[in-house]
Amino acid sequence: MRDGRREGLTSDLPADGDAGPKRRRAFILAHTRLLTPPHVPEIRLHLADEATELWERTEEELQEIGLPPPFWAFAWAGGQALARYILDRPELVAGKRVLDFASGSGLVAIAAAKAGAATVVATEIDAFAIDAIALNAAENAVTVEVRHADVLAAPPSDADLLLAGDVFYEKPMSEAVIAWLDTAYRAGANVLIGDPGRSYLPRDRLQALADYRVEVTRALEDSEIKHTTVWRLAAPGA
Image 1 (cartoon, one colour):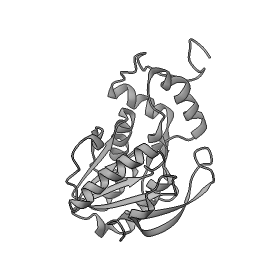
Image 2: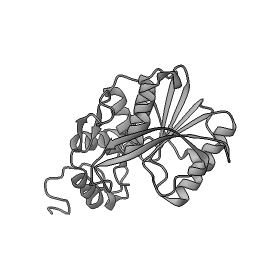
Image 3: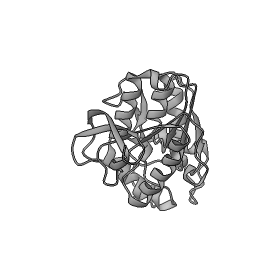
């Protein structure tokens, strides 16, 4: 460590964590590189080359100033499966208003835009994710509206299609998410979910649409290949 920082890590983030967009984007560009997710080679994203290294840097550097771990820097299995499903079936999104919940890197939102959605909104509570999504959308020459907000605290979206990848890993979060998605579903929205079998996946409300074997990094998951399913939210007991 040198001057309170991991040696070799450059960061101009202010000590209070109030990083502006230029500083956040500089950090993203400095600690990621353009890669294609294994299951979605049509899309290029700014991703962490070494998951463990960036995670350690985030915990030791960024977390000290109150910032969350860099979920935006990885192409998670559920998102890869959902993006693949959409790109292979563009009729699902063509001309539709799409919302990608907890978008992370923006992978699923970008896939929806590429598949011909009329509008795409990507929501996130992490300011770094918001800037990563903007960078990734520009890299793929698509238009995605990025919304920095906790949408679970707001009325349900009026989107035609709601997308959610890898969101059922924590019980309180999962309960809030399924309640919010259910409200949108009851209002007429189609809801698709990508998930590799997270602990709190509400299987009793879901219909399986497609299965994939998605390559991931063992630094993030418990195996290098995750059996991942795309689900549709359905009525209780359907």
